[in-house]
Length: 262
Image (tube, rainbow, N blue to C red):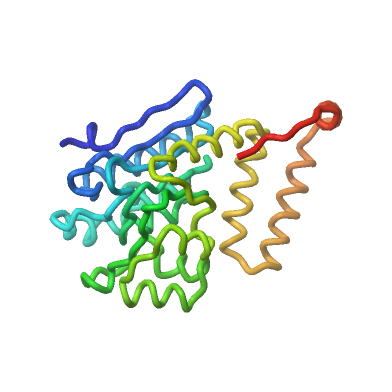
């Protein structure tokens, strides 16, 4: 199966693009060619004005089982330093919201890819697992740092040093995923979230994602200063007409009854 078949990209008229890792017989393990294709897709979609939200999922019984170990030397020795073909680096640079729909195994590199998503939805049968220590692979896509910050250091140490699986329910309790849904429903739930995002001001969606993600790299005081700086920059750039339109929009929304539900 070549990269054209193993990575499926489908967009809709509303701007939701779904990327499917499609190598089910190998539990969606990634070859070097697939990694390069995925990195370039995220890079391109991040620049594409018609793309509003990206959903990442896998076909069959897995989300992604990590690197195809037959390609390990190829990937780990050289490409680990190449930002342009670094999938996780390109996901982290992507301006658009990324929703992961985890429908099965998310193992090692697949776990790291899941954690590079902005929002994660998992089916009840989903399983997260870090096998770096089991196979003698050094993490290079952030798992050693992100998991401890999201779930707490003790949980991260246990998960990574034992290589024991984390169920979808555990992942939800740990704050890794926002929704656990019935089997076969992860993609539908991800689309619901994407559609809710589309109802909002898309310029602000991009700015909001950026300030949250950039702030996470800082201590709280610096992050609060970053928010202030970007808020001042945003409002300083607005004209009187834009403020008037904002007021009219808020007034119109306030007069409407009902609320959207995820």
